[in-house]
Length: 120
Image 1 (tube, rainbow, N blue to C red):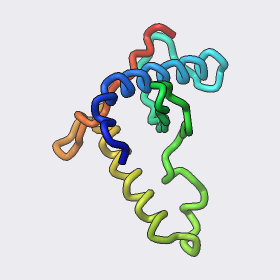
Image 2 (cartoon, helix red, strand yellow):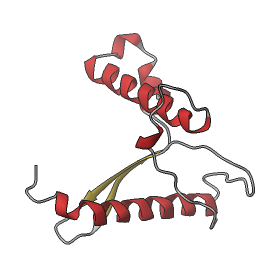
Image 3 (cartoon, helix red, strand yellow):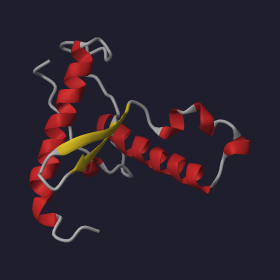
Image 4 (spheres, rainbow, N blue to C red):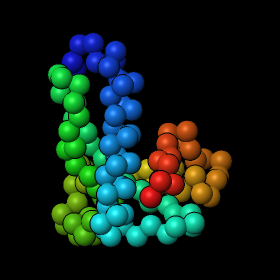
């Protein structure tokens, strides 16, 4: 753990949010994502950002679908503890994300933040 990281968290997190919205906006403009103007749309993405010592952030990975959607998880012979953990984590993530649009008592909506894409 890097000493003193918490003092930079708020500013770094805001940069990550803004850059994630920019990546999604570019994907829509390039036709990689089909936005529906005037319609509500629900997508789950995963963006991994790496900050450096100069307060820059670098996109490390952008996932368009959770691990449970990957073919490698269908093969029971290839399943191991790591893959089982990924599937369980993604199952929880998907259940929580769906609770935004279909609220239920066990959902954890507070863990999610909506990206305002009205400018697209």
